[in-house]
Image 1 (tube, rainbow, N blue to C red):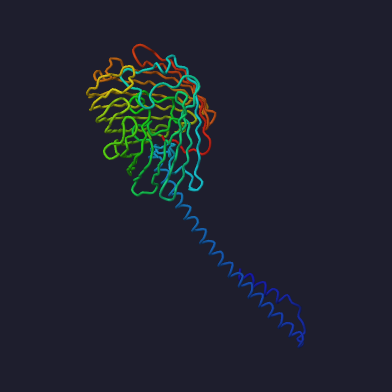
Image 2: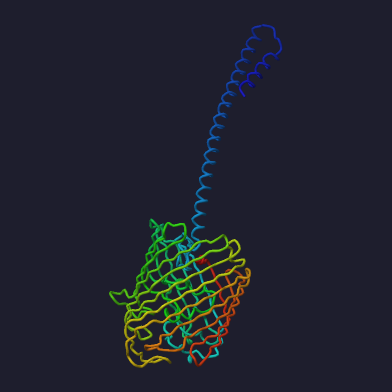
Length: 466
């Protein structure tokens, strides 16, 4: 730009009229020269400033480009890690559900996310629930058939949020009805770390154990209205208690997690805190990954060890429950909301070594004689759910229990059940489910159960686990 300015000045000078060389005209020419020189100096200053600004902008552009490339590289790494661990959804971390994962919580500790689940049903049982009994197994905990007629199923209110940069907290209150009596209780009340190094995490308070697959999931996330027979028989439908959990996520290409828990042992299958208030110990390992863009899997092995005193089924002694679980999901490009298939199964072994003490009120099939109780019982289920589209899904589940041939609940009959469901999902926040179950609890009766369930979610709600 400088040569152009100088050229303009030269042209302007020679284009001026040829005035006579008088003293007055000389003064005017001198002033004009000074003015032109000042303008030239000003223009040169502006050119220098523009060149400086251009260099600065060029540096800023290069820096922004480098930052963008680094951000894209970091995002690619995050996507690679997420693809290697499809099981971790959230909230609900491995237990999660909604149990809600810390990553899904509101970051403002003074404004926690509030989630409400309303759950209700109408059930028609061909056997009156008061006349129902299951050969070889006590109806302990929340085991047994659903109430006859209209009822409020388990509904809940949850509050959860990040407490600060190191902790996440959740409180879940439940409301239900049993034989006309309303019950309100604390389902979850725990804190969990969010930033321990090397993949470690700690949870403390009241929560559901991470043994098996279904146990850590809230019942409103199930594909069926009720829990499988094995969960009812060995865990009272779901084992939760006051305790502490330590888990470790291994730095491997696939999802691989190890964990251990210690609980007070206040709930079935235990019968009360012992050994200094620690009556139940658990351990688990879970692994999962992608087979392809459309197929993923998750599997686990768990054990629950209880030092039981006066459990609801009359047992006192050492009780071990071993669980193996597996889940396989297929959906086009992994998007299960638009359609796909989920296949899941769990197998449990209940090992007893202790004594049986007859309760004050005997159920059908219970022995009235105090005696040793040493033996094993088994149970399991296999289910398949077909997601037709975003609105409809259907499923089938087969449950079976294998009774002990000796001991206080000795039986030659093994209970079983077949269940079919058809679910209408208006959105991710509401559903209506129709379920028919053909239950064979004992050799003398068959319970045909037709259930119509509604379920809605209000407010913020964390993502469900795999």
